[in-house]
Length: 387
Image 1 (tube, rainbow, N blue to C red):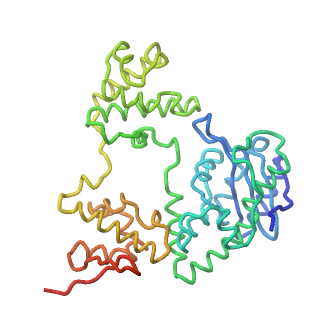
Image 2 (cartoon, one colour):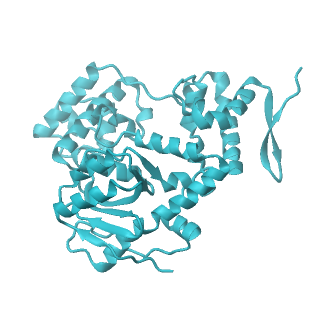
């Protein structure tokens, strides 16, 4: 079955306001966005797709209307239904200044009913039995006018999303996992978006763990300056200063332009004039700052606990497979380290994850249980007899 649906193109403010008024009378709506961020720091919103009721679909042109009007909808109790919402939440944060207070992510929900991390195409095919129109993933969504094929492709992203949600909620309810999916959606909503704290940008620097404390402090100062500059100019951070140059400068810690020019990754664009002055000022600031603390890793655990990371990780993978839950939702390696480090905010110490894994982890750590391998069932947690 092909997936094409009549939809309205919205490029007038009064039209958008009327649609918002109508949506505020609904219980839920499907939403998706198209955007670009290859040449900018902040994502540039190019299109908003909305679907609700009995086959109502609109494509809102944010280049022609004041899209911040959606804040009125987002702050209501009407539930927004996304698929793979993380990037949509990021772009809406910057374009609208808000994200939906209530939302449901079908990709997250799929991860609780055996799908792993499903694509929308996979869910549409398996749950509704439809195949969306194929589109060019390199489409320039900022171009106007969009072709009929491009509009059909965009509308398809919301056309059956509410039906997919209904199917997934039924499965979640049967498994007793509706609240688990809701909690995971809340966790996603609370994740920070891009551009909120330049002082934390050093954590995204590749190989930052290889830096000693003082160079790490310099890297923090450099990446904070780079992030603020990229935000002010709305350009990608790599155009301000590449990662390789940040690492090279942090290691060398130059005090003048000559030394700066000799750092790895630094070319003439960065070693002279105002840019060089800003870089050298950031280096000096980093040299005087307290080195930032790296997040806990297995190397930071007490020596006797380090083998437990691999052991528990293997068991978690087995639980994920048995329970048909996406492993990345259930627990990451950093989640395990946080739990073993005694972090009270560790995800495994709270909520549904604790219900599912907590007792088993405690038995493994306490030496009252062991893992065995069953050729047919994989790893099994077996309680050891009391002494």
